[in-house]
Structures are given as C-alpha cells and as structure tokens.
Image (tube, rainbow, N blue to C red; front, side, top):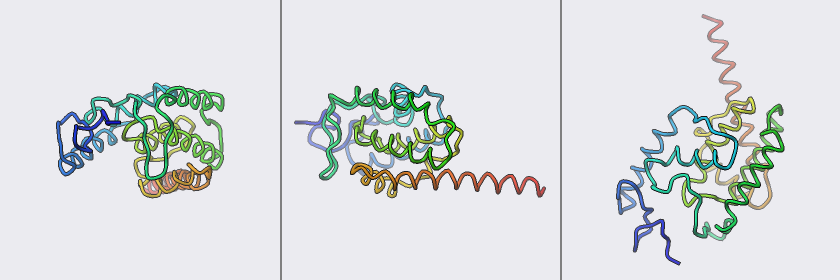
Length: 202
C-alpha cells in the first residue's frame, strides 16, 4: 500500500515547510521540535486526548497531521506495531487503566518507575502516531511523573538507551525501561538536593 504520509515517490514525510529531501527535512524537524520541547510543560488532561495534545504540541510546526492517530500499518525491522484500526480503542483502554491506578500517584520512586515502564511499553507497542512516538512518550513521562510527585526530564533521556529498553519492553521485559526511569528520577533528586545545598551555603 502507498503511504499517504509521504510525498509520492519518496520516503520524506509530508511537512509544513514543503521539504522534499531528507537533508533539508531533518534539521528543520530538529529545530522546530527542540523549540517546542524547550517550552514549559503543557497542561493536559491524563487521557488519550491529552496524549494526542502532547504530540500536537511537539510537532505542530512540522506535520499537518500532528496530534492525529495513524491510519497506516507500521513496522520497524521485524517488529510490527498494533494495527491502525485498534489504535484508538487500545489507547483509550490504556488510559482507563492509568486512571484506575490513580495515575500512579503516591508511589515510591521504584514503584512509580516500574508501573510507568509497563504503561509506556504498552503505548509503544500500540504506536499511535505515524512519526514522533518516542519523543511523545518521553514528554508524557515527564508530565505523568510531575503529576505523581516525581521530577524527571524526559527530554534528557537519550533516544538510544530508551529505544533499546523499548525493544526489551516489546518482548515483555519492562525492567530496562523501569531502571532508566528510576535513574532519571534519582538524578533529578540529587540535582535538587545539590542546588538546595548551594543555596544554604550562600
């Protein structure tokens, strides 16, 4: 099947700048999304609609379909993500589970990391968007953690270890992503403690 998200005869995603080469598109996308990620966290409801709003926030300057669930099948290597016809229902179900768990509030960092890892790995398996799933997941982690009383900077988690952990999660092993999330929380805790110590020294 042809991909309605790319310019005909290319692999370049249709974009608001009308760029038809990877060499031109890549830096444009980086600059636009970096600027959005540098903005304060958007205030979103903890729902699937809120999750789509996060994707729109990051990619609103890049893709005309920012914030919309995909309509085509997606795979990466030998990994096939959820069929597009089930994306909306599965994402809605996932957010109902999060609501049932009170959005992971009042959990110790270790418990929060474990539960967040499972939810994020399941969201990754669904892969609701044609592009930008990883960045949306990391920003969502930041929002989820903040609302649950934990500090973590999703944008500081490098894509490579995140992707490696997500591959393990796709196979049902949530421990690598849990460890990555916990490490990010503890790093922010140490950073805040150091800043507070410096303030007291003054």
